[in-house]
Image 1 (tube, helix red, strand yellow):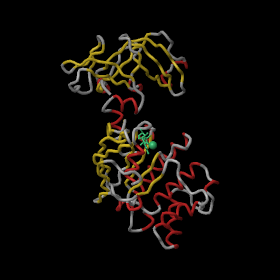
Image 2: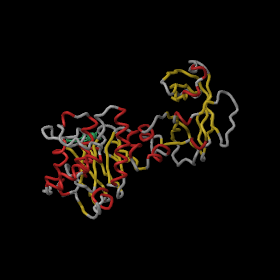
Image 3: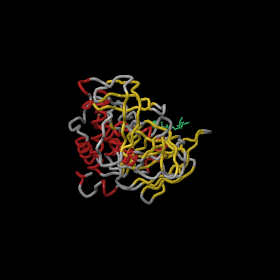
Image 4: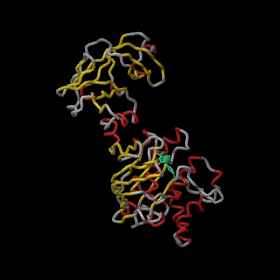
Length: 369
Ligand code: ADP
Ligand code: MG
């Protein structure tokens, strides 16, 4: 921690190498051969729907669950057989797990008392870390007097007060309302940047994962389906599951032959040569679609054109959500940004519409899940 002189957490941060982790609960395969490496000081988020194995993976790293098979190496140490308190890991649980009968200060001091630190050092560290989470002066308050956001900060303070080499967080913000959650995402990321400790967080909220992380590990049915930077995940999803889970998307079946893709009679210019498989899906992100309005569109790159008819238009504030039935028969969704709405009138249902998609934004994903 920067306030404690030479023992900076950044210098003590360690990489975590997870190899071929399998976890069975009876017949349930909670984790199915998961491998990933989290770099020293990196912020990685485990993202996936409910039941995909996120908590199980975090608990195997923390030591609260023993994997059926596989290895977890922290720094140079194989930790799979070590109990949690020997792993030097700070943990923020989903429901904070604060001690309700203790004050804020006592809660934060707890990990230091467990480690038999001298009283004076404990007092000093507690004060420093409360200051770090913007709760200076709250030490003598009772936990149940505090708001959800404040409790979350205390749980965070308690997790980092003993300068663990790794910080784990399981859905740390899920109990907070949307506005506070978004503020805390930025705050947690800033704190990480100041302290530099290797951090692994769990969330089912894709935007939260994109906001906080250096890289995101997407889990699906106990398997790691893609591990990449937020930008790569969004711009180059490995499969339909990732494309659907992160951001908004519509898909069109296309046939691929000799490096070109076809939707009905429309030949599509592509961002990159498609991989072999003939069955592919064209990925359409609402904000990538252009509203051509019949006009000739001057653009430096090739524009693919899709014609159809508006079947639904819903005003949603910053945009109008449009459902469009394409001439090929498929319905897709797109958004007309508020600034492009003429005279506050949404496009009419039944009106013809022509959508454009730049070749560089024309991406295919494998047709099977
Ligand atoms: P997530 O955190 O992504 O929602 P979990 O890791 O909690 O997912 O669960 C993954 C799968 O393992 C689910 O099918 C869940 O029901 C099962 N599971 C998790 N913990 C246990 C347990 N203690 N006993 C039996 N099954 C479990
Ligand atoms: Mg969970």
